[in-house]
Picture: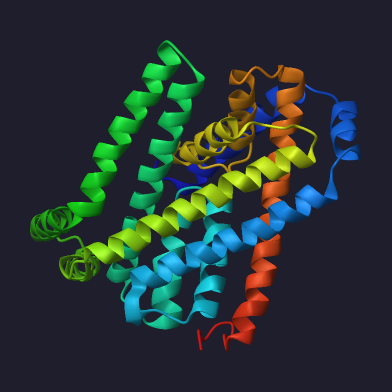
Length: 324
């Protein structure tokens, strides 16, 4: 939808309906019961691993930026801001990374977009592989086949984006130029310059050793993210098996591709968590409050990350508004 007001109004409506449907499946007493048995030790471990997970993600962004990006401390703060925008503003939040990198650190927008595309390609490939593996090992029948189909489709699309994006960028550049000549589109020049920057960055290529490091960063990052989910559920008194944790964590993260612009993914992510738990055999009376509380703690961790990253960024010489 091009109408932003209509798009976000629809998103709020979807969030409201989903949250209502979830709320009627549980009671305040169930929430109180779960909160009363929260184990602070496991919750503290979850928060610590979450902060380290984002450090690994920052190191991957630094690897992608090469020598043209800011230092690690500044990049950690940038990554925290990017996490916040993507979590709160579904869809449009993805563009915060190249925008901040360009405005505060003078990195060309096209180069930032290329870094983001490659990073998200590795994320999607790893998530698809982990999700399909967990589905195949946990389920049978149609659910198993669906998991395999999803993984194969995502792998094909993301491989094209990751390793064929130079050709895609060149094609898009020609298409934008042709469209501009035919229609007089005033923004075409800016879009074309961005595509040129992206194509130049992609054409430089990366050696095999760089891709190996990117893969290792991605694997460590997402295994850590799964462990965060494991600790959160453990803190709430639920012991998920490692494979079950992988299924829940990857299923919810893959739901970020759902084209519904809800603020903070409200309703969609909670329903996804509850649905994944129901598929694992939990009753809906237990799955719904567990999913909602797990999401609540995940959002609280996000704000802690933003505060911690701001302190680290200031210690690294970052000044708000200048990028120096």
